[in-house]
Length: 581
Image (cartoon, rainbow, N blue to C red; front, top):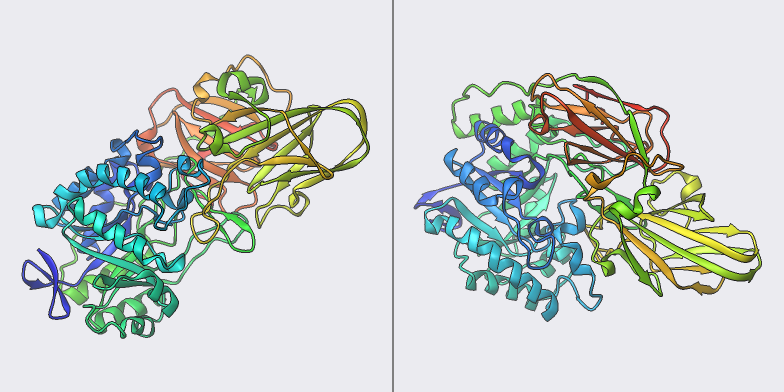
């Protein structure tokens, strides 16, 4: 039994300080879970914390997946076998720099669904999901003989809203579904956040990355709350495209961790191991501008993206073990990496040549966002033909949240990019087009670059909502959804007249060791190896290479496919033991 008594945590009646490390099962291939959890245990942590990603567990309404890399029950059981307790933060909203903060894309189809408040439509979907999720988690609670010691209600709600009725409903629903371990909220230390995001009678925790003793004072006005705990002690930060890679000295981390021990407070170290935003799962922020997150979730964590030790790991391990009187035991060997070398991309085919093979066509009087067509991720192409006599005017895109290629009569007119760090020549959502008498075909290819995961822009629908020529709305579209989940249907005999282009090659590997695909010489796009989507690349940095887990490799005939959106200066990639971030 894990409980709060006499202003301290107790586990089976004995005082227990929570020294937790954050590590998300869905960012790590399941074959590596035991290795990463072992390294967490040997670093002196007694607990592991994880979010739960609704979008991957229910990719379509009513269709659930809890297998393979999403087998959260096995992840929790693995932690238990190693002697680790588990804190679960089930959402439904998780932020986490993850696509839409964990919300599934189909939730955005109905514009009448109000997120993160007491909305019957929204809560109906949440309850359907939670009913399935809690049927898996409830038997794993420490009250049932398992190792889950606590679960969170919502996530950093005080940074978003103040609907106490909603928070209370979430708490009560969890209890009705069988949750009987300690429940808690977590928020920033600003008084407005604490006031908005907490519930009377529910344990309150804070999130911050510095000034431990000062920030913990935000809990002083809740003297009956219990022991002090930081649910997210930020050891680093995440990267947006076009920014410098974030780093942090481990000396500043050690100073703050010592303070936790000095004031007898508990913490969850965010992140112990960040992992990777594989596929289309990197999220975005939107403050003054839209800023998509890179594929790597390195976060300056104690284990780097591929699970190897960092100087901070060794420093924190020594501190945690020394302060708890734990013997320093031998560590697993460092992660082995392999150099494969140059891989010549020998085949090429075009995206537009393959629209009938990998696309789903719709007719639409008015342009709609991607979600309206039941599309979650990828690209979407809008085509319309204007007929008549028109003078020169401004062609503008309405409702564009990401990046679009605009084509006039089949030729690329330019790129519209509303991301905050885009090259200056692309920072626009309109073009001047010449007049015509007759017909003019307009095509707009929109890339979904990650839905916003934090703040007031989380209703982030992808694609576009319309085109205008001057003040006139343009209607009558052929819309092609391109979810990029069926690239095995590409016809490589069709060639490629223009970008975007797909490239393909075969290569052999010397082992099942990890490696990295270096995208130097390419502009922007995606990489698949043996059907696994490694994520996005973009030459504006800071990330240049993509992590390739060795467990996804074979000795012979590995297949790599690259989708290049803008243009490449080389027709080969280098797969090596060097990571460029």
